[in-house]
Image (cartoon, rainbow, N blue to C red; front, side, top):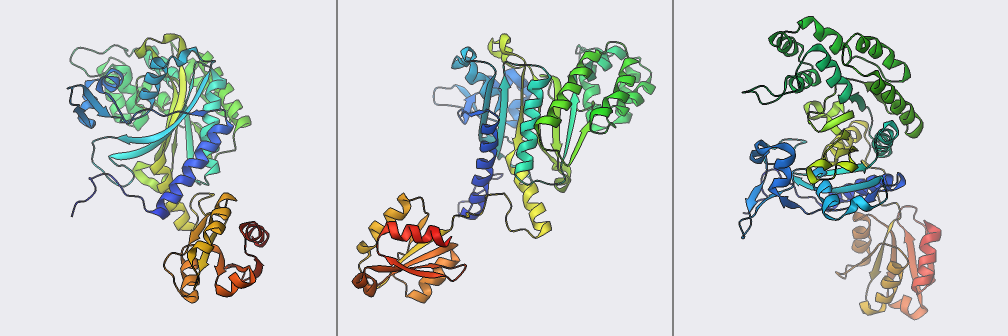
Amino acid sequence: MVQRPRGTRDFTPKVMSRRLAFEHLLEERARRHGFSRIQTPVFESLDLFTAKSGPGIVSQLYAFEDKSERPLTLRPELTAPVMRMIAEEGMQMLPRPLRLSYYGQCYRYEESKKGRYREFFQYGVELIGESGPLAEAEVIALAIDMLDACGLENWEIRIGHVGILKGALTGLGLSGETPEGATEPPVASAMRLLDKGDDAGLAELFSSNGINPENAAPLRALSQLEGGRETLGPAREILSSLAGVSLDALDDLQTTLDAVAALAPTPPSLAVDLTVARGLDYYTGMVFEVKVPELGGEGQVLGGGSYKLLHLFGLPDLDPCCGFGLGFDRVLLALEAQAEASGREEVVPGEVDRSGRVAVIPFGIDVSHVLPIVAGLRAGGERVELELRGRKIPKAMKWANSIGCQFTVVVGPRDLESNQAMVKNLESGEQQAVALNSESILKAVQAMR
């Protein structure tokens, strides 16, 4: 038997209903915040991703050559394709800032496990052509609004600033240049160690670069700030003792935090953590990430920040940008875990079709008599299932209930003679005889809902 490829999934109607509800919820929130949906190809030029991440990324990609021997790859993420689209489609001429949202499948060749797949889905947004604390606050506020709207609980958002962290490390004497034989600058190594909480590794790095390892302690304290307005006071005290640190960036971060508090719902937990590095060297300013404890080691469900990437396409005037990527699959896993723990059936708000499906059941008559009724109900906005197997009434009613119909419309020989149909609400048991036409049946369904 042919099986689906490793690291991919099939989605049954029930699962797909949940996913569509979640996608619709995210898109509606993005629309409210002024973002417009775009779409890019599933495969792109391989150069697009090696230019962004270096040749080492090829081993993680589904890279191939087409029949003309052009190097291509299935896209591993969506930010770079969006940047390519802006450059290629001349979107830099549009009024700024651009507020773009996107959703789609991505592919990475890596070991698949729960919460991490070779084919996965990402939702994201980019605010392009405007910088500063208010632009950053708009992006963070949208992320918080989305997670709040979908009903996710017990999540934490951590907000940092790469510029502040880089300034603190260079002020201590770490170089931003890559030494011969090394794969990254000492500053990048230190940021990665701070992000992972590897104090021993950081102290060792400091020692090997001629810096007192005791300097690791105040930097580690930058990760232990609480959320809210008052948290940047201790950070200011720590950073003011280090050379090369601009406190202007700290003032901007305070403005961002204040604006987020005004623009977004209050998250379950918010922390200012100036050691958040995001692990990508094109981030330049504010960075943030969201984690959910129920997912354990794969707990991060969203991440983003301010970055410069458009220069790779000859568009420096539109940098910097700010955006985030939301792990569609991971958020759904977290929602499912939380729904199961609380005994809820509904995972995503709006997942259950509240409008109530209608089953039209003809028996003992030519089905052509009810087809105009089915068409009329559908034109009126109802979701209608036509009974196709000629079941007897008891089995037909059982079938209608099993597929989640709220209403049945039964039409038999006597109904044709009297020009009436019986409409029944399966939830309440209420039933009503109405004229045998779609307009009357539609009014009855709406009145009994």
